[in-house]
Image (cartoon, rainbow, N blue to C red; front, top):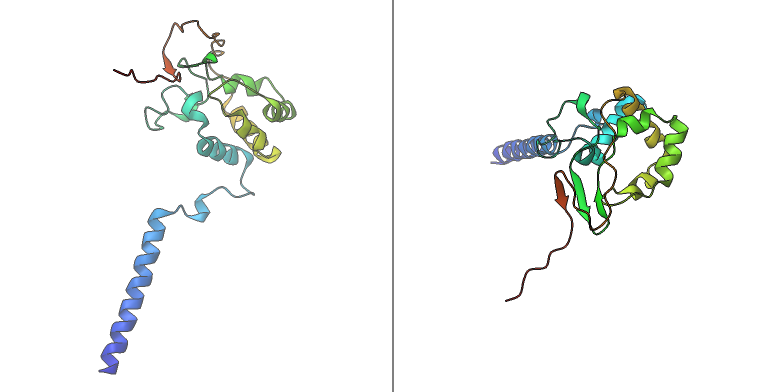
Length: 174
């Protein structure tokens, strides 16, 4: 009886460990797949662009397609405006901006910019110089492409093209 119990115990523990390991392998990215500090600046920049969600606004069609936009089309800004109490803003063409600056100028810009909503400029302020340098290297690697973004439209003026409405609308009370 004790041999059977020991065999069942060892089998059960082995199955538990293997099942737990397999579940973790599916639910967490492998550490070797994540960019390391020693990775190239360009790869680190690509990673930061992806996890920061920069493409969601700065790449036309990125969010609606579930990220299925070729990398060669990334970060050219968008024709879709964001309308709110501040007026209407358009995501800038990061490829044109970055390619017009030195890395030092980019870092200074990113650390000091205070744009209009919905751009979370405070997130740039919190990035390290190394991270901003990696973002710069990746965007520079993509090269300049596209057109400058539409200028912001003041509050009260209607945008001519597509826009996402950030104005708060209260339900009518009847």
